[in-house]
Length: 88
Image (cartoon, rainbow, N blue to C red; front, side, top):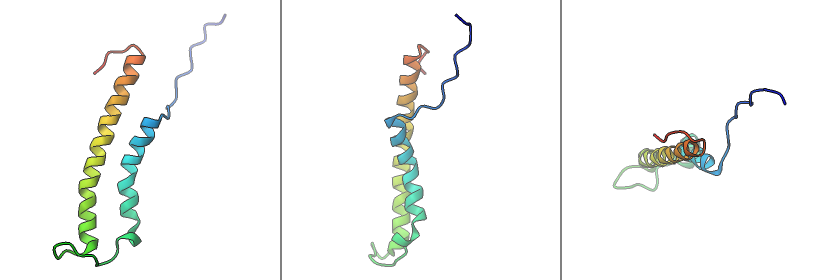
């Protein structure tokens, strides 16, 4: 029996963390795919599509970031309780 220390655990990919990553990645993909929204029509209350689409993504990005944050906190609480640590 040897007294070798356990190897440090690397990053763990869980379905919850994949959802968090998708929530944070979606706004970047939507904004970098310019061809999908580089047009004038349809207008919304006189505002061309190009502008109101981007402003809509500001709200969507905020909501997705809030969801990702809540999921991350839940994941961290679950990890701390399974390791026997104190929950924050």
